[in-house]
Image (cartoon, rainbow, N blue to C red; front, side):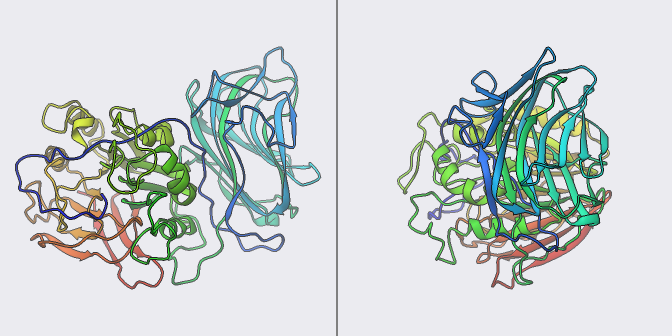
Length: 541
């Protein structure tokens, strides 16, 4: 929520003043860029080198096109997507874009939908080439829909055991860092590394990437593929010791790292959006910190990700230009500001339908089903649950509501996993915005022996002791964090709750959770120039 003044809620009745939010159509996918390897050759600052969401209705941004087209029947977001079809088998269906300067470390992110694939030959999604057009590396799918990577320098293909679902949009990220015999390849599906397709010992030569290719350039293939929201990113510059605690090595296998924060992006009309105020609109600073941390596997955006009312235009102008670089690995939770239909504060693109349409359009399938906004996913050995605490927009939050029934069923289906849940409005907070919205959810989570709860809403950082569902200290209970530190502004502490172990209300940053098979480590990573931090470890229940 914005930095307004209100009294603490009297327990008993959920607040009905959360006025739901926004609006309408499409998004361009910006992808997280992994930190650069130390190498010689062309050097560039972090940023997006090229992108196409195909909403121009043509392929004019590409240097050359061979058979690939744009159409409106299959699009991830908005009205247009690209499509390549070869059924005879026929000719190529691809496009290439030449870069203005060679790049030794790039990440291609895109949405892809396999409509059909046949024959006996694999089909390319992405191919990276030198400026002269010589192939370096490519990402492909087999007729059995297995994802694979081909090293075109050594002519060696590696096929994973990961099946790419057919008939639905999937997010792929393909990183290639050219560094001789120590070149790096990383492949992510839905923000999760594909087993067997990541290596730091590939031999990709020393020639920089000079072209990116979308689609298949060879003949003799049988396929129908749709593409959308392609970006080509270069990594952020190496941070100084005061800006990041990241390491240069990837996280250990099976130990993913989740970066979490909520209450993030200022409205484009906010007078503090220029980011010169150290106490407001610091979303870009926090985003840069997360992007620079190469250990981060996934991002939990804890609601109120775009102020004031979650408009699609606001998402494009503010969130997308900052936290958008993390979109490929972000699993968002919806907040109350995403539902607000109008605002007395400076606001961009509010939607009077109050359906969070801007949020659901921007994040697409990653946000869960519109009208619900709750879903779950697995991250390493952990099961992660995302809930919607703007209750009236999700059919309620109480016992017997559709969301609560779904939660109990989801917990029952994952009885042995370490479990983490996050949602926007906290049950426990020493700020001014704790509510009863999630009371039944917390009871269900505690009964199922869940381990961690993350929330936002109060623009503070707070860690609680292990406690039971009644909020009483209990060494066998679960641990809750409030992490409303994503950049918007700070809100005050009010009455310190008995189980509150640590609180801070003047530092932006993110909570970093390394999720081991039977335990977790936490660390609050502060913005540059701030000294507040927090860390610890705990076993799963």
